[in-house]
Amino acid sequence: MTPSASSDATANEEQERFWNDVAGPLWVAAEEEIELHAGPFGKAALAVAAPAVGEMVLDVGCGCGSTTVALAAAVGAGGGVLGVDLSAVMLARAEERVAASGVSHVRLRRADAQVVDLEPGSFDLVFSRFGVMFFADPIGAFANLRRALRPGGRMVFACWQAPSANPWMAVVNRGAARIFSLEPPPPDGPGPFGLCDPDRIDAILRAAAFSSIEISSHEERLQLGLGESVEEWVHQRLLMGLARSAYLDAGPDRQREVRAALAEELVPYQLDVDAPTSGLMMDAAAWIVAARL
Image (tube, rainbow, N blue to C red; front, side, top):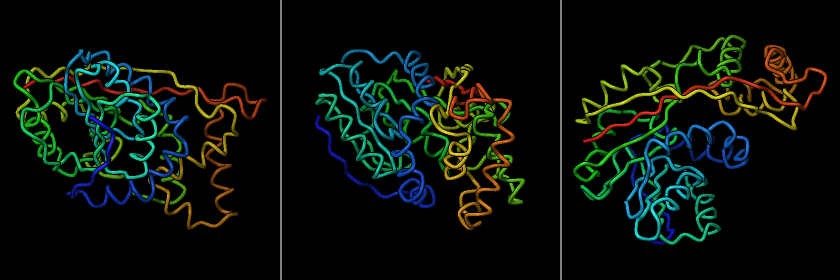
């Protein structure tokens, strides 16, 4: 297989706009920082998935392609990997990464995994690192992915636990919601915490006809924001969070006030309060979910 991005229709237009117009460009620009918080969980999920030489793998929400390349290295030239994502800009970065890696058994496809037309029984493994929490219809989406698995096939994904277990996201989001008087998003709607409840994960996967469901916890202490001020890090989190529109509409003076107020809330997490660019040390937690047909 060779890298080539193609496009399919999406059933989740709001998420498509978000990942193409807002989040995608921001993620590509902040790719190094994002790998600091997502990478360890991706490695943990890969260890559970244990992709084997010769297997065919579907990488859901492949983003900038780091997991796609890792999967391709594991399955070797006798296998293959298809990476799907909604974001054209992130797929463009993934194409660059795939080309630089030298692997030739990867395809990239711009598609909504919720409805993408995949050949039934064509994959041994469906994998995702934080790419399955954004489905408008999670049962339908996971049923669609299940149909793409061969008999005996498996699915492994990482998804974030509750905000309380992830202060690296929650502190800024909670503070911004308070400052801008924003209502919290519905706990079961598409978003980073859409699958934070393990009981809900189990119920969704069983409704999608998966079985042998195993959900394990993986925790990390993340060093974030190294080499930048806390306010600069807050700025990036605000641009990616639920307060984005309110923050951008606030004007430069108000934006500075908001960044300063939220930076104060992050003082307990600073590695060295006397060194403004020393970074933050914050807890993060995800579920590693494994299921079979």
